[in-house]
Amino acid sequence: MSNQMELQQDRSRHYQALILGRAGMDLYPMPDGRKTRDAESFSTDVGGSAGNIAVAMAKAGARVGLLSGLSEDAVGDFVRNRLQEYGVDTSLITTTSGNERTSLALAEVRADDCEVVIYRNNPADLGFTLSDESRQAISQASHLVITGTSLIDEQSRANTLELLDLAAEQNCPAWFDLDYRAWNWPDLETTRRVYLEAAELCQVLVGNEEEFAVLAEDLDQLITRCRESGQFVLLKKGSAGSTLYAGETRLDSGIFPVQPLKPYGSGDAFLGNLIASYTKDADWQLAIQIGSAAAALVVSRRGCASAMPTPDQIQTLYSEREMIPAPSWS
Image 1 (tube, one colour):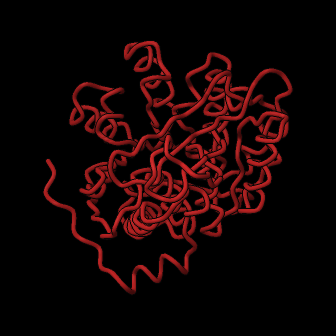
Image 2 (cartoon, helix red, strand yellow):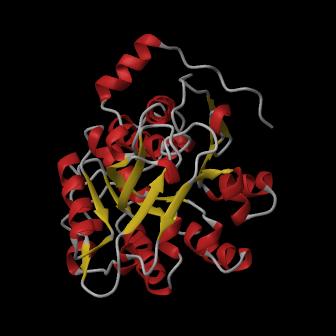
Image 3 (spheres, rainbow, N blue to C red):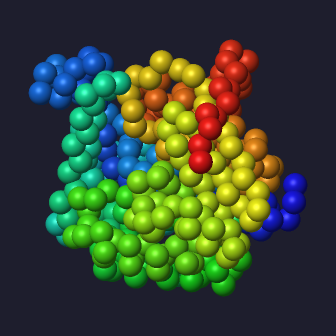
């Protein structure tokens, strides 16, 4: 592997990654296939981009901690307990005691016409506060992962940028999962300004074409700038696979064919398993392949956190199906 493809990391540190962002409760209409309005009952799970990524890493065998906020109530307790059951370190999570509430999502288990309704009124995850313990934890992390939702609030944004500065000081590579949701932001101009400020402090930028359009109108020019500055760009292309850009190297990857049960959760599974694999073996090709397998398994199951696969389940998929090469993509 050439030097331009290497992401410097200290694998002797306690955490393979710290994940900053949203964790919440998901409710799924039952039986599968029902619209929310026609549900007979609901099943529960942990959700939220950062929570899902953390669980994906934990189930892959990585040591991972979550930096977030949870409300001091039954919903917050549910999320915390489930995260712990999955093996995520919750010791750095802030418990909010005001009017903040842990996010709630109602997500239909349907491959088509799938509606997801998210309740984020005064969200507790934005109430995460930096402590001496969380600052110290950065020095014990091989990687830091931030998600775009951690940047929408002024105080949360300040905390995120401080963590990125600390990560740079501690030689802890930072990943930026753009996780763009337009309804979180007043306008595109504001989002672009904030995202660019955070992106300058990160070594790996992750998103789909729509999300990268937040950073720049011309994707090719953005990729060129990132390559010249030594940043990695991981472009998720859905059914067309993914592409990693690093220096002069471009690495394309395909997908594992499955019958989808729902359209969400795959991106978190992909990223969590990719990071877990890369921190272990420093092999981008293998990491992307494992991430792609995890993404395929998650969209074929109900749930998000509970659907994240184990290494044995990924190995079973390998033995049963071959990856379909990525189609041509300019």
